[in-house]
Image 1 (cartoon, rainbow, N blue to C red):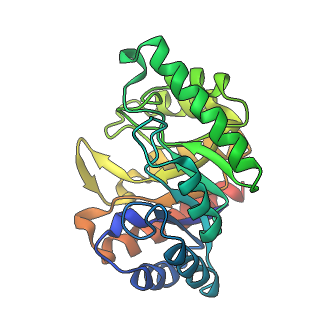
Image 2 (image 1 turned 120 degrees about the horizontal axis):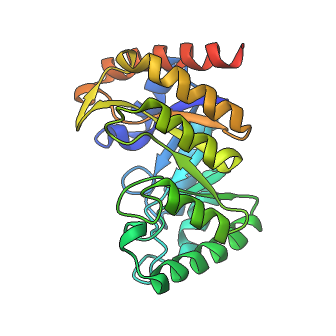
Length: 251
């Protein structure tokens, strides 16, 4: 299982600075974001970032696009071409712009249909499609995520905890419910809306990681959000993440 960083954690840092930080942390991968570091349609930048990543001995596990499967978005083909140039194995997309319980059936089906198209187009390039598990999308909860996964064969999802997770068992249950359709996880520890050191969430993440591993298909766990957005906090969280994954994988 790859450990890594979601590049949007450090939007103000350059590609070179992020690669150096990930190397210093002893992690193995990066999920490059499509908003700042590898913009949609900027093929030359994508090629350069992909080459720099591989030259550093790192893997681009995912392209974190901001494609929402809605008509006003940039064409998905543009996102796909960028991911191919980058050398990403997965494209992360957003399942619409409405919560599952607030979306009309027609809206849901339109997003599902676009996701089916994305999955088919990406498969031709050997790339998988995974949705963000996030509020303000059709995957804002497990009900929405399951409905979507059932409606779109070949689709996967990322998982991340709700910002505040008082019921750790509930979070574990959600992971196990999603099963082998979870391909990656965004790792962070928050209290309410406040980012905290990952070390404070070790007990929770030991359980989450075990559940993710039991699903049998998680390829990467990438750090997203760190205390005060500081490089020092990231390096500390990286040490914790490596220990959590090693503990899980050696059991």
